[in-house]
Amino acid sequence: MILVTGGAGFIGSNFVLDWLGTGHAHRDEPVLNLDKLTYAGNLENLASLQGDARHVFVQGDIGDSALLTCLLAEHRPRAVVNFAAESHVDRSIHGPEDFIQTNIVGTFRLLEAVRAYWSGLNEPTRSAFRFLHVSTDEVYGSLAAQDPAFTEAHSYEPNSPYSASKAASDHLVRAYHHTYGLPVLTTNCSNNYGPYHFPEKLIPLMIVNAIDGKPLPVYGDGMQVRDWLYVKDHCSAVREVLVSGRVGETYNVGGWNEKPNIEIVKTLCTLLDELHPRGDGQAYARQISYVKDRPGHDRRYAIDARKLERELGWKPTETFETGIRKTVEWYLQNPDWVARVQSGAYRDWVQKQYA
Ligand code: NAD
Ligand code: DAU
Image 1 (cartoon, rainbow, N blue to C red):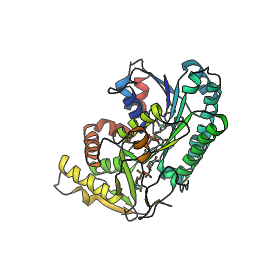
Image 2: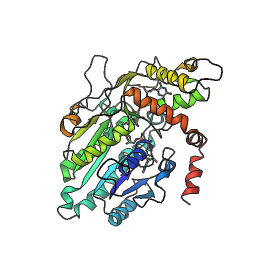
Image 3: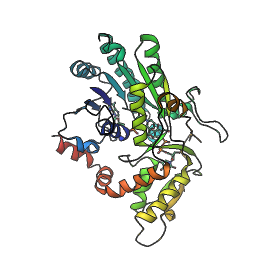
Image 4: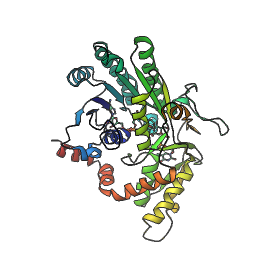
């Protein structure tokens, strides 16, 4: 069994579905999914796993030491994959407290509980154990237009409360390896997009606002650059690193898809013009509205993912063109999911299904 934290969120739920899906060797290995079900956690993403004995869900906090100790003793996982976090930069600017609590204190408590459990394991289980920490490219700070992409050797220069809290958690993970020998792995990934993405983040927000006839708020001049990776490619990268990554190493994960935000928004508008034309025949681009910039907005992220390709043979399978089309199609095909998330009713849905 593996313990996945934050497995009801965007990437975590895609990961659980991928792990228990087809096409690789691990699909029979059960997942213990520990998630606090904050506003970002949505068990509806995992509805297809209802009644599947390979998926054990526990609602709880990675900062709850007593719960962690019990869960580890009872389920005896051979690995932990830590997705649980507060993940939205704008929310971290308006209220950093939860980010400090979950991303730093929560990761610390998780590491402590795992260290105690791992220390009590016998060989060879102890050496084979892995703690994989899922992190972000934002810990590296911001690049100028002419700078080379971030490698794993880039210094940590986080600029937002979110990225600072993730950087702190990365340092704790590193320290638990160097000090206690805990067999850790860290991945630093660029911007994900795809199914089950909460519509507070750029791509899903633009899709649902466009369909609802609302403005498409582009921060500042819209020329900030992000590197975009289809979420299922991130999941396969995490799986590869968990299986074959070198203990103590960090791996950058990215899609080689650098794009300015305004180009992303215009691409979404063009796809929607084709797949779901506006009733009045006008272009969705009419809804684009430039708004005040995000405070401290990082100008550019770019990921050099060559280490992961060189050492583990991982490469993304989706191009931006294929991935973004699939994403728009998914949102168009799942209006009920969108409506329940927008209205907050996804929480009632979960309570009914899991009562
Ligand atoms: P998300 O906000 O969609 O999901 C986070 C999940 O964690 C939710 O299900 C939430 O309920 C859960 N959670 C929050 N606090 C918790 C706590 N204290 N205890 C247990 N569960 C808790 O986030 P996401 O976009 O899926 O990101 C997952 C991870 O990947 C995060 O660590 C994030 O920093 C990292 N990451 C995200 C991206 C991206 O583009 N979204 C890119 C790189 C790295
Ligand atoms: O780089 C990886 C990171 O990507 C992850 O670690 C974070 O968890 C994830 O949320 C994401 O952070 P960003 O801040 O890059 O994502 P977001 O979707 O919030 O914004 C993407 C870009 O679009 C960013 O430059 C801000 C801009 N933006 C965002 C929103 C929500 C807009 O212009 N308008 C918007 O309404």
